[in-house]
Length: 139
Figure 1 (cartoon, rainbow, N blue to C red):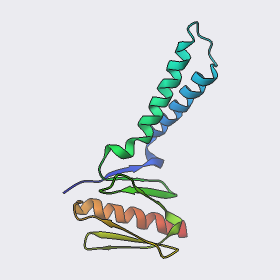
Figure 2: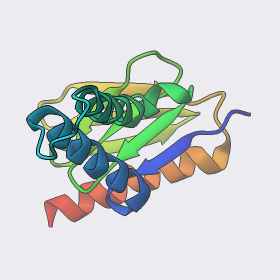
Figure 3: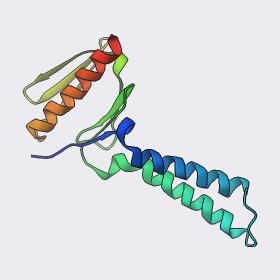
Figure 4: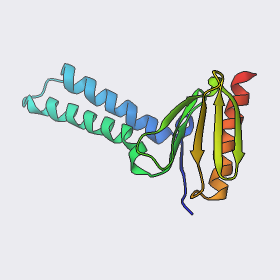
């Protein structure tokens, strides 16, 4: 059975720190707040900022099955190259039947994820994340 990598952005302070550092490096490198004798140092500083940004935004592609969520929505990537982006306030209901997760949006559009190769515990956790955050946004 395959596992899902879960990434809750609102609780991952390491990733938030990397993102803030990358923005600081970019601003310092581009606007040259610190005058160095060698002007190439500012280019290297901004290069480090761009590298940190690339690492931050490429996390989704490091894992075959990846879920990233916060209090507003989620990106679900299961057995595909690109993920599906969902907003929790647009979700009307979810159904988990026979290893298939079906999400019905408010506009009656249905999104189905095939979870037959995913472990049962990860399947349940994914369903709980969606249901919990959907209920929290409707109250």
